[in-house]
Image 1 (tube, rainbow, N blue to C red):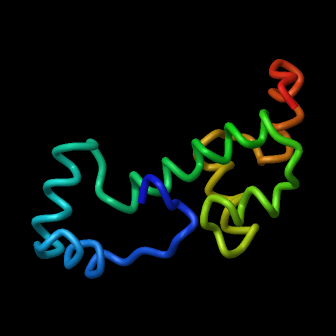
Image 2: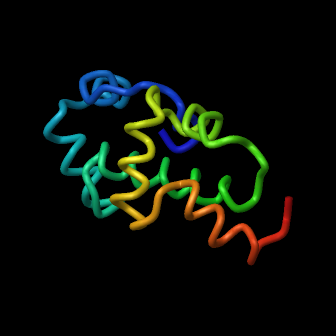
Length: 101
């Protein structure tokens, strides 16, 4: 999940890949990360997107794709819920401070 955030994941597949069941995986994941698997994945994806918005010139659709959102509307909604700004406004406000692209 960390290395390939663009992939689609499901809890059964994740649990099977580590030889456990969904419940045990969820509890272990919470113990290690502080969040259930898909909450952690959403936060990870959005953090990657936030970094890409200010350090690259990729368009927002490309960033959305790179971090695993099939639909830009879902990405934009999740981003705004997490950071209180749309991806475009976030880029406009913070890319100026980080002129690394």
